[in-house]
Image 1 (tube, rainbow, N blue to C red):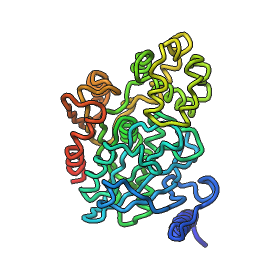
Image 2: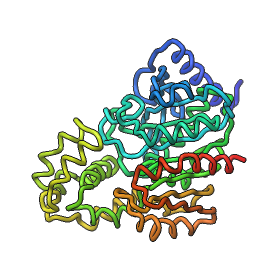
Image 3: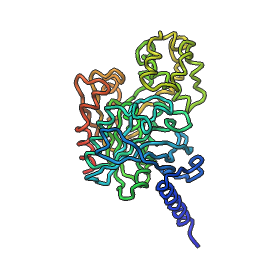
Image 4: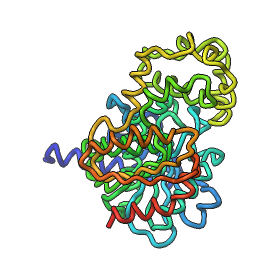
Amino acid sequence: MLSAHLRRRAVRWAAVVQVLLLAVAGLVVPGGPAAATSTPGAVLTVTPATLPTELTPLATGKRITYVTTTVTGGLTTATGLVMTPRTGKKNKTVVWGHGTTGIADRCAPSTSQDVFWPEARQAVAALLGKGWTVAAPDYPGLGTPAAHPYLVGASAARSMIDSAKAARILDPALGTQYAVDGHSQGGQGALFAGQLAPTYDGALVLRGVAAIAPASNLDVLAPAIPGTPGQGYLVMALHGLNAVDSSVNPNALLAEPARQRASVLQSGCLYEILDAYAPLTPEQLLVGGALPESVVAKLGRYGNPGQTPASAPILVVQGTDDEAVPYDVTVGLLLPQLQQSRQPVEFVEVPGANHDEAVFQTTDRVATWIAARFG
């Protein structure tokens, strides 16, 4: 009679085999994650993916639905891409965390190349050029029925780590070593992944964390946003916080003119959202023109990286003219927070670079840094 341990292994491998057979047939596993498996990283569906033209010569792509977990440990699903180099494959995985695209399903990069941003394409191309398989999650709620926990760092981080697990299920030749690399929202997620890895990534071995213009110190940034062109970020952040804390009600916090624009959150993506909210005054954006301190504190609690020690070396890249993530916040606040960890922290300043230019100007440098971490 099989031991309990062997039975669990048999069930797990049976689920994997079933998923792969269904993938070959082009079928979909019905139901939620519990309908197939309870293992984070397990693949539920696989379909061929059409990659952006810049990436097509470099890789083949699959779009996957896979199991991940919520910040409270419950099961949920996520979608994303797994891109395999056509040549020079080295059997290591790098997870790419994309920057803000929006909070609606139509803003998932795996299905909408309009939000597979140009800087992301160049960054992914540099990773593929090193021979690494790239897992590119959409994050929970982008492409799946649940609400997207925008700027909830642990949510993005879990989906990033689980996408690396999923990539290994699709390609058993992949080794256990992986790195995470992200921009903006994805940089925030990458830093959280570095914190969560020791208790969450199982057999994987995290070798490095690269964060380009990462979102951080939301409790400092949020009160300064009303009345600026970035007000759409704050609206999305309130809805993202509501996805994990129902006591935060955006409709009770947003003023009437802002509430009247709510449809853009589902009909548009990043730039439509920013354009919709940019003209509002602070009083038109928020009831009383400001957020309650309790909400500001929750944004920090769920969104600030650096609250627990990192588990791998860190590279932080920041442009001096960043219009979305202030240089002073990264240098003056985030770096000292990260340096409290025992892990080495390397900082690359990009003079004159804005939020996206910081990616464009450092793709090769970031890829070279990751290569050194892999050894």
